[in-house]
Each structure stands twice: as structure tokens, then as C-alpha cells.
Image: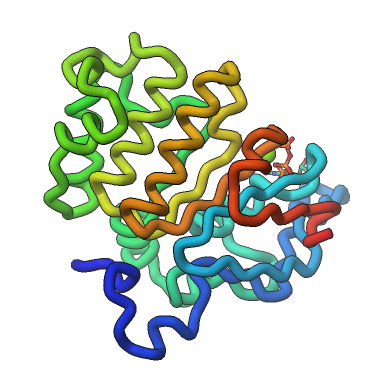
Length: 232
Ligand SMILES: Nc1ncnc2c1ncn2[C@@H]1O[C@H](COP(=O)(O)OP(=O)(O)OP(=O)(O)O)[C@@H](O)[C@H]1O
Ligand SMILES: [Mg+2]
């Protein structure tokens, strides 16, 4: 299936944001204790935006990403991704969304360590039901030398770029990253940022990255600051 974002020809395809939160609450309960992780979050990210989500520890950034990824449901309110209200999807719809439309990049552990970089990208492409060229994607991110090596022995920065190359090969229209550079030095952080930007520039993806790094915040189109479960 072709991404709507490649050729937004019809007006209604432009009528929705790539990611929208409407008055979203997420409350965690354990016994009598209650944590309000999101309290009335309102957010709209446009197609092809490159956005950083910034904010203090515990402000709800990762919770926001888990809801956007359909891994958790909101306690109240609506989350829309790529024009679809995630609450309306059944299990198979959610799996299709996660496997076919979304790429998640976490701080680490994004790859199958026993597979080579190339096999990682090929498997991600196959699971997404696509036909992307793994070798070309790795080359585009300067990873030719890594293609035949086991992912588990690559450097942290290389592993993150392999995960991003997989998102590119899958043509994931929405890329969500949670502190993707937290374990990297400045040089590797810059390479990963370039890779994320090229997902937007060369593949038309919408890229949302949670970060504590001021360098990441400087590199994006827009910074959204979250405090106490809502946009500051
Ligand atoms: N599964 C859970 N059960 C109970 N409380 C949770 C759960 N997940 C998150 N929380 C709480 O919700 C709040 C928001 O957590 P979240 O992980 O979204 O913060 P964050 O902004 O990503 O923080 P950090 O910058 O440290 O990663 C915190 O108070 C956290 O303790
Ligand atoms: Mg977090």
C-alpha cells in the first residue's frame, strides 16, 4: 500500500495532522495511588514536520509516545495518527498500523542483535509488507561497511542509524523516537540527527523525537515543551 503522504492529491488528505492529541488524559492507578501522566494534552503535528518533544523527567513524554504508537490507550480523549483515530482500530488494525505505518526508535535495543544489519533491515521491510532495498537504504545512511556485520557488535551510533535506515526502507510515514541519542557522544548524535532529518527530507516521513538534548532541539523545525502532562 502506498503512503498517502507521498502524493497528497485530495483535499481531505491534507485535512488531518500526522499526529493529533485531543484533550488526552492518561492516568495510572496502582492500588490507591494515582499518577496523572497526561492531563488534557492538545497537540497537532503536521505531515513532514520534524519535531522535538522536550520537558522535565516525568512530564509525560514517553507516555505520549506510547499512546501515539498505540501501545497504550488514553484514559480519556482521542489520539489520531495519519488521519485515523487509534481508539477505533481493533487489534489487527493496530498491528497493521505498528508494523506497516509506524517506525519506533528507542534509546537502544531496536535491532535483532544476532542478525546482520542487512538482515535487520530486510526483516523490518518484510514485516511491513514492503519491498524496500535494504542494501540501498544502508548505503544511503553511510552504513555499507556494516551491512554484513552482526547488529549486536556495531557501535551504538551505527545501531541507531541501522534502525533509521530500516524506517527509510519501509517508507514509514510516521517515525517516533524516544531519546534516540541519549547513549551517544556528540559526533554520533549529529549523525543520527542527520539520519532523522533525511527521513523527512528524502522519504517524506513525519518525525517526532523525545529528547533531553539541547542539540537535538536546535536541529528540528519545532520544539514542543511538555510540563506536567500538557503542552507548556
Ligand atoms: N506504567 C506506569 N505505571 C505507573 N506510573 C507510570 C507508568 N508509566 C509512567 N508512569 C508515570 O507517569 C509519569 C510520566 O512518565 P513518563 O515516562 O511519560 O515521563 P517522561 O517525560 O518520559 O520522563 P523521562 O524524561 O524521565 O523519560 C511519571 O510520573 C511516571 O512515573
Ligand atoms: Mg521518557
